[in-house]
Amino acid sequence: MIASQLALVYGTYLIATASPGPSNMAIMATAMRDGRLPALVLAAGVMTGSLFWAILTATGLSAVLTTYAEALFVIKIVGGVYLLYLAFRAGRSALKPVSDFAGTNARRTTPRYRTLYRQGVVMHIGNPKAIMSWIAIMSLGFRADASAVILPAIIGGCALLGVIVFGSYALLFSTASMIVLYARLRRWIESMLSAVFAVAGLKLLVWQN
Image (cartoon, rainbow, N blue to C red; front, side, top):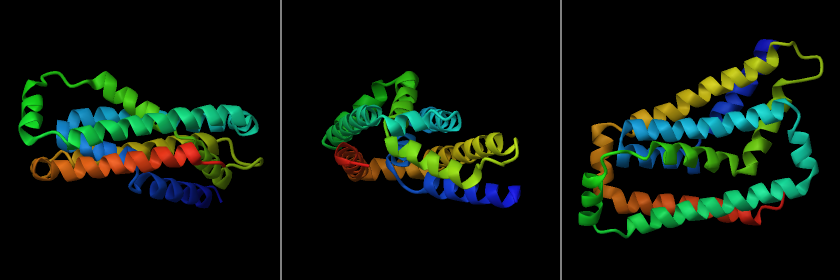
């Protein structure tokens, strides 16, 4: 029974995490643009945001957020505005000439790890749909008569899967071939990233549930 519950939870989380979305797109673009370590730092921020919602849900505080609509409203607005800001940044980058882009990369000697980590955290915490996903995951695997090992197994197992998925995106898209591909398709990639952020941000701002 425990194994089947965990398998269902892990499968659901894996599909949700591996599916293309704003966080994965951001990790992919960062890996191709800035390299492996910056992408891993961004992925760590995303994973921290995911664990924040996981722990919040596990401690029962999610009931408070779902009861008080004002809390979710504020999170939704902040998250939507931040995603639109990221869309603006990506769109502005897409409009830069190739020479400007190359010169900027040449002058950048110290990656902005703190900024990247904060971006990952805020991007995930600012999405109220993340907590709804965790509520669904917890409801699949955690019941009143569940074993004491279920809760830590859910959080620990999903955390491990998240690290593997987000880390894989960072490692895969930071390879030399992907970096060359990014150099060739930079404007198209940044434009697509801007569109993804814009759509996600607007959906958050108009999301009613």
